[in-house]
Image (cartoon, rainbow, N blue to C red; front, side, top):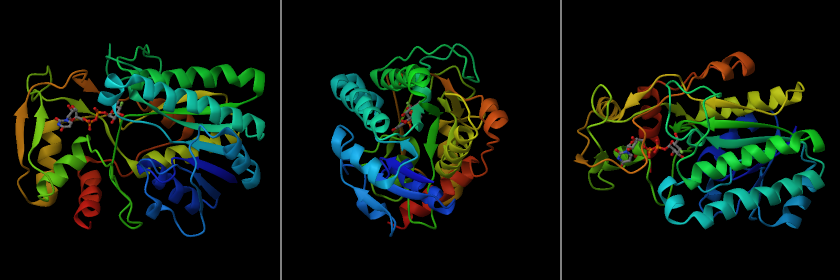
Length: 323
Ligand code: UFG
């Protein structure tokens, strides 16, 4: 199929582009390179350096490419920044997505796979989190993702616009063979921070909180390999092609690792001591965020294959060590 990937030069988007090419799709990328990297774009794939706010230009890209589906990754992703600067998040994650949807509707595209987040749930009332858990985001980032999910639901019946929202838990890992990995200019995520500190590329990592009501006192998260995420997106497209209704799925493994367990895994994989210090809790961090991935399994037939914590860290380690 002819597909357009927004944010296709970013972390998850660049992995998606490779997965789409492997599956035989014809891909074009829309990315303004505000956080993406053009050296991730494979030969033969056209990068349109555009912001998704640019309705006319994006609509023309969709038409010229004969787009049949859009994978929408272009987004701001930092929870803390969204609290400090919410207007940027509502502008770039909600208003810009409305513009993209206008371009999609006007170019005749009716299939859409959206990068959503576990942040739509807010503080868990139960764990693991299934898709019927109440959605009460506790920060603007999660609120923008939920707003887009609601817009997508509203667009289904009147416009025949079919979409799947994929609620990622903690994306991590890398595609070592293709030289892709996590490269944020301002890194806030635990696994790359731990690896960079171990490689001497930054100072010790502060572990945020050791007094949570978890077995070892540190927060538990559900880490999912970025290539497993990409596979789920392909299956979501298959689902839409089979006539599937607009819906949403959690993407996680169903089991979690604590911050201390992740540190131990980096030490196992690297054979080195990870420089860490202990600090207070980070505002807004729930103690445990673990997905029920049952729905993606039963409806999409998705099963993560690369998401053991050691497997994720091995790939992430190789990526960072090679740079
Ligand atoms: N952590 C530290 N020290 C650090 C960074 C993180 O101890 O320097 C801890 C956090 O407190 C948390 C865990 O490591 O307990 C994971 O933190 P990340 O920042 O890597 O990821 P989050 O769980 O905060 O956020 C991720 C995504 C968000 C998404 C959220 C929803 O990055 O986009 O999951 O599940 F909203």
